Amino acid sequence: MAKAKPRTAKKTATKKKAVKKQTAKKAAPMTDDLYHEMGHTAYIILQMIDEHLLDQPLYADKELQSKVQKAFSLMFQVWQGAFAKIPEPEA
Image 1 (cartoon, rainbow, N blue to C red):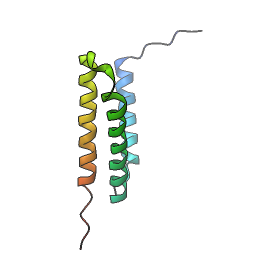
Image 2: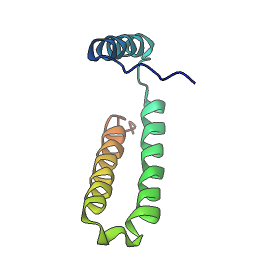
Image 3: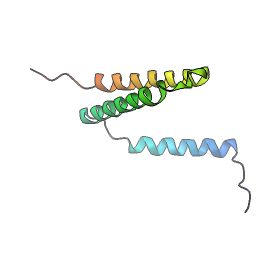
Image 4: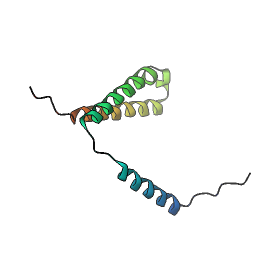
């Protein structure tokens, strides 16, 4: 089996630009329903982090503990941000 050639920095940067450009073209406008789905998904991820990572004995490893807490904090910000984008219903 032939060895794979290492990527050069120029090729990697070009590929990243192409992916970024392609992603930007496909982005659909966000709707209230999409923000709600994003918030709901973030909530499920928060539950999983809480139940499956924060409750585990990984607290002996301070580096992993810090990363899990950071992931939880960032996902909490996503959850808050998604629901903050949905306007309050009018009475």
